[in-house]
Image 1 (cartoon, rainbow, N blue to C red):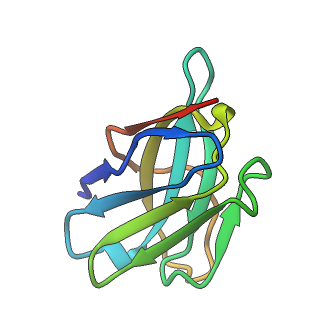
Image 2 (cartoon, rainbow, N blue to C red):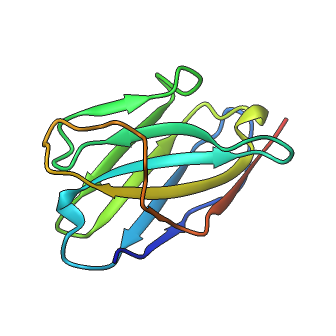
Length: 125
């Protein structure tokens, strides 16, 4: 079992930055592909970014590419999402998710087994 707790959300003006963190419980964090997803009010949840077990590979949605950076610290059991040049359309609840994998290069953001409860990001115009 992996428990995930997100933090770092808040209110920011357009053009600003925020860094989200996701702390994971357990001793198997380094065996999990990690991802960030978001859900805006009235919309379906969408993929934002994913990172491989070691952190060597990353994958981004086109809407955030060049503005967001996903990273992880396996020694701290934590994954981060650095968000810059934020736009009002980035307003959403951001969720951290995990899936155990045996492949180092795996970054597929599918079939996530574990989810956090989310942290709200609001970008004002």
